[in-house]
Image (cartoon, rainbow, N blue to C red; front, side, top):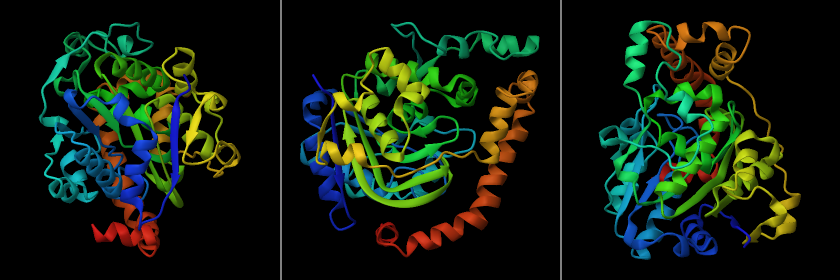
Length: 374
């Protein structure tokens, strides 16, 4: 059976209704059992708001309104922290809280949820290594610490559906980021950064785990404003007026990659997920709804992936010429300097200079005006 990918052109005046139509086209009710409870996995790539960076308020509203209308009662919007993001401040800055309040839905930051040990049922490509004793350790103290480390996931996720709300954007570590990588912020604790060295394998592992713990999975991607260049933060916002959804996360990310101008099969995590039977990456074997297949196949936004200084140096020290010092830089107290450098560059330097100019330009657009209305 061909995976279904729904794609619609949209506008600020019809966006909420278009999300409802999109979810129907994706046949989401066939895959998400109302009795199981549903996680809404938000996407917070930056605590601050920047166009195309994190889940848009209209994206959240469109999905949430449709769920409520279709009588889904147990809904749990969630997001986790990283060493450089805050899920509480992020929910405020990205205007999620007014939407959740409007629909009487409680926000569940994963920092406040119970995390439990989880042993995957299937063989992992990288997680067993990343979360094994002594991974990255350089001294006995680190070894003692790592012996206590084990892969954990939020207890809240077990046995519930999940809806991912990513945006259409590039990513310096993975070329592009979408529904598959959105699980990165839900199924891994604050040690997430250690996965960068084997990020593609880790993302495939996380998709495998999702299929083990979630009875239904849906990706709903916002491409009203897409992010080109040095993603997932320091991007060039571009108005693309698209939204898309699928219950096949590999298919959804493959279509998103294609639309941006990338070959899906040349992106590691997409190719490996396809080869392991976790989804379909072959656009010729998909069923498109909303937008005609011919238009999808011809469309090319011409995006390119760049690397911010933070991503560049992360890869330089983890995989590059100085990878031998990785244990000293990323597995000791010296890592605090890396966190400080990232925060300083993104939040104080880039955002307050280049970023604000881009936001000012965005605010004059029709989508910018919609953003300001929330």
